[in-house]
Amino acid sequence: MTSAERGARLRRWFRTVGFLVRKEFLQVFRDRVMLFEMIAIPIIQLLILSNAATFEVHDSRVHVVDESRTAESRGLVRRIGASRYFTVVSSDPSMAKAERDLATGRASVIVRIPRRFADRIESGRTAPVQLVLDAVDGATAGVVRSYLGAIVERHGAELEAEAGPAPGTRGAVAGPAAPLAVRSRGLFNPTLDYKDFIVPGILVLLVTLIGTLITSMNIAREKEIGTLEQLNVTPLRKSEFVAGKLVPFWIIALAELSVGLVIARLAFALPVRGNLLLLFGAAGLYMVVALGVGLWISTVVETQQQAMFLTFFVMMLYVFMSGFMTPIESMPGWARALTELNPVRHFLLIMRGILLKGAGFADLWRPLAVLAVMGVTVLSLALRQYSKTTG
Image (tube, rainbow, N blue to C red):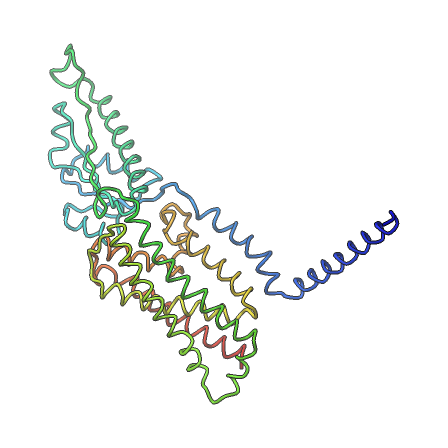
């Protein structure tokens, strides 16, 4: 082969590839849904998740049990509340009420100041401060304990500097005892086993993936192969068609959850402290939401590829804005508000509440009510959109 022939073949190769590249670009730019998914969605994810996905701990909710009720104890409470890491949400002398707040998620840590707190400081003895932590997320509990411990120690050092040497300590060989000491214990996950925190979250994501991705792709497939139009001209009502499509995945997801719970119990010794009937009732309600989201995705896409891409975007928001990987309290205010629209957040709260805390309906009625409203809203919107786009 001469050099001229090789050059001609190379030019033909580049020309052919150029035509194919041009054809693919035209096809992409003509598909407005795919174009939006490829350009706008990654930008939206970057803007939202860069702010929401943080491993710092901010605005942890503190329930103070001040049994001392003195100027010294009030000073410590003010110092905790002034920190950007903590928000004092309640101050009540009842330890039982504080532990209920911890169980329901209204507080993430209890600061207990004992009755003779001020007396021990004035006499030069060490005054203990007890921290009771929600240890479901062991990593976050460790950070909260570290932050609070530093605040208590700094406050103790200031009290010591203001008071001067305690009576009887001047000239002593050994220095005086530290004015404040932190004693801590964890509830719901005392060993800080990370599996107890992560396994329920993985189970939630697995059933979410089944409910959302498979539903959206299944109906998108009906569009691609043309059977959806054939079904639409039959006497079959669209509500009947949708129910027939969604019910199998609803059953499969609940069966997947059952198998996952058995494996988690046998392989990871996951505690089951609450009512399993309540858990499966909540899971059935949650699957209505997940299936509704999948149905809505199927109404705005035309192909399985588009459905997969859009579902991936939704799943990314689900994971990073649900408390599965990063604490919601650490997010900025606007991101925390957005998490209220995330069904995974509410079902995670229910799963961990029932399995790890033994929470009952009275403790979980709010997230259950939110899921019920979401289920009705999302399914209704998806059915309405489905009727408009396929009728």
